[in-house]
Length: 296
Image (cartoon, rainbow, N blue to C red; front, side, top):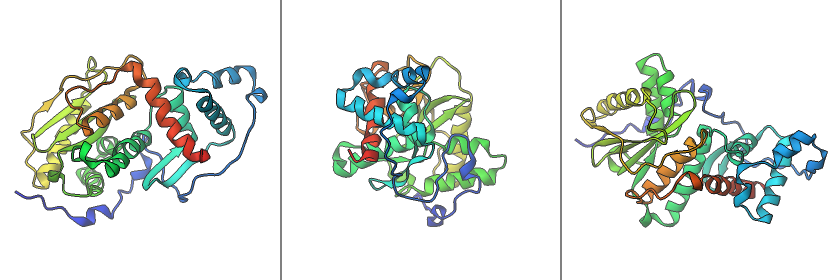
């Protein structure tokens, strides 16, 4: 049966969209915040100064890049607002100074960081080289959290409608649909909906832990898809190999990003990355936005 998608689904944002804990608020301006500060780290208290220099990515950077990051960290002292509040490079990016600082210091990633990674390393490169990518769609990193915080089916459907309504085509026209999942209280994993293969795949960087809310979310998705003429109720839930595993406690969000990047770029059988690559991945991603902020 062909998929019939209601175009009105893109127009109504659920009332509680702003308030889920792993979602940043979209506020008014679409321009970068321009603040010029060259404050030296020498003005900081001793402990704070040493902490500033102890970001995990410094070992993989050159002198110029370290200098740019020091300049950015000075900005963080006087700014608690958004670095970017709207359209950057053609995509919505709502990033705060704290989001980038968390990347540099290897801390847990928010949903907006994952969304911006997809914009930067999947959507933008696909525009330039579409042939190297599979036909993938993305429903946002906050969807699972919204759905599983809802108390009634109508609210759940509103969030599904909003997320799926932002796709540029019907779901059954994709090879893969990516749905990052905020699991438990402080973990990220990736759900991949294989439309053509009729399977759900989970890529989890902490496989040794039992995450009961993952199959619960998959069942919610099955019910929603069935209501929109995709009979996914019998599709199996699999945990494929290879699946690189994390070695630190706060890299799960970055692993989730790398799973998507490799799968979208057809590196399905290899997933050629490991925990050792995380400092470089964090530094490269943080510098992408730091350079944009300073027009460097």
